[in-house]
Length: 282
Image (tube, rainbow, N blue to C red; front, side, top):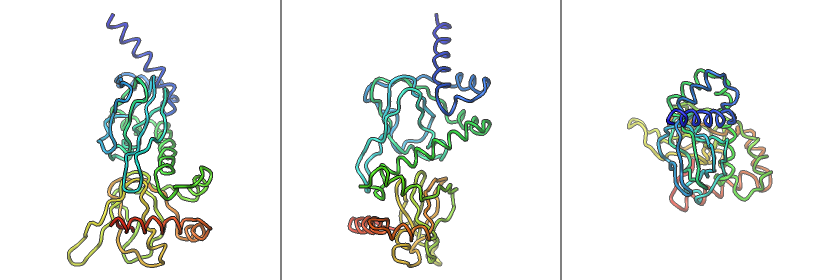
């Protein structure tokens, strides 16, 4: 009976994995490896799988039911639901690829069955299976941008078409740990919006070294004050860990910001509200 139950579970896992976009084109050997590694998890309606800020442990596939990713409240916005992920959907890849904490809370919308694939297995598969890596990166980009449109105040109050038209003007950039995006004393080369990961804003003071000013997380802009005022940046902004950002080069910013109701007005309003709350803008 125990063997029959395990066989049934493997067949169910196989069907779910094949139906999942990032796994569907894998070869038989790779798919078998995933099936053997997958662990079944169940959630009751309303149960939380993990919370925003938790360390990543696995990538998850929804076998049955549905979960809701939730962006927790921040200084720049309220707590909000981002989407609904149903059978065949996967999640958890962002934290694994960026090697950072979970960027959303996951809560079961109804009683739900999941498959969990440990981070070590996922990391090995991404190294060994180019098609899987390409699929993960494609979905990662789409999900990060979708989250930004729903959570960043830069896009607040815009229609869906307006949001996407503005987002298309930005370029996607991967910033490895230590990458300098904005250099203190130099004009900001671009407007940046954090998609995933974290940026550090530091004041470089000789001879004492660096003074930490702030950590900028998902949705936060940087470079805006230099661009808005036409002055050198007051701080250096560097990637605290591997991060993904949207970048709008200075020349494109000038064209976009000059449009009625455009970026200049939005960023100036956000900066003023931040200053009123005692927060810094960079």
